[in-house]
Amino acid sequence: MKNNIKRRITTRVCADGIRRGGFARRTLAEDIESFHARVQKGLPKECWPWQGGKIPMGNTTGGEYGVTTFLGNRELAHRVAFMIAHQHESLPENVCVLHECDFGLCCNPRHLHLGSHQKNMEEAVERNRFATGDRSGSRLHPESRPRGENNPRAKLTAKDIPKIFELRSTGMPEAEIAKAFGLKNVSPILLRKSWKHVPIPEEFLKYNALKTHRKNNGQAHRRFSDDDIRLARKLFSDGFTVAQICRQIGKSYSQTRKIVRREVHATLA
Ligand SMILES: [Zn+2]
Image (cartoon, rainbow, N blue to C red; front, side, top):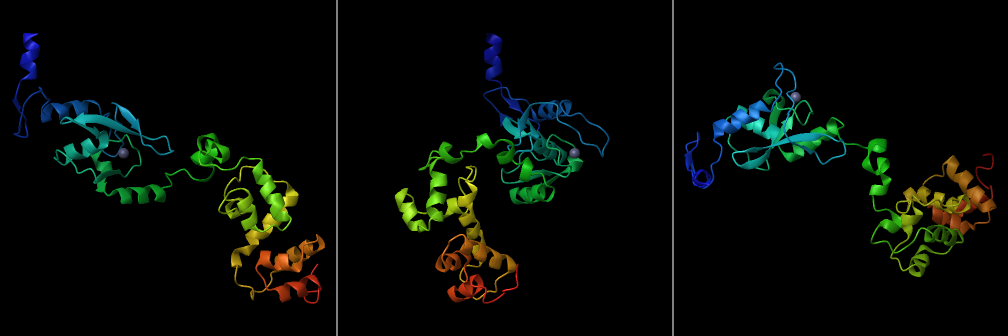
């Protein structure tokens, strides 16, 4: 007991010359020694993995950083490796220590350099460390994303989505559909930007397919591509009016009418 009290009130002069009181802190030398004991050192060119505590990097690569306590502060191990190698006792939080080897646990100071968070992100993108496409979290673990009804802000249910497409395919204006469902806008749904995990019957999607052709909205004078022509004629034969078709594909009424009447491009199959 007596010993304990004595320990607690011990004041030490640390190797950095600062008098630290209250608790018996480890000295800088002790911290350095304990740090080195937890680094598995190899050849100068090799990565030196951290053997102590680890935390996940927080991205989807499953990488880890080493973590330790240095002069009483919780720090990332590679940052401490850099500090010790360059005789710093601390680094501002906004200064990053970057790995040239992309191995988060590496504590070989030759593999470490200073940089900003932005630089770190740029390097990560450059080296393809971020998971995109089929490696991305949203593909690997779709259940982890609040999709559709699981999104607490959802106003619709999955059953409403095919209904919206069906109504749109009858020619009902988007604004009216939105009103009917208490929404501001249904175009993200029709453009398959939201609720895209809900399957839509083929016959309703046909109308939606047109929407993606509207990229050149407001450029009615633009020439029809062969695909535009085929699409316009297909829709005309499916019973859509010229007005509906030209609005959907973003071309002029008169040109669309000529196309569907085969007054122009008559030879196109
Ligand atoms: Zn390394």
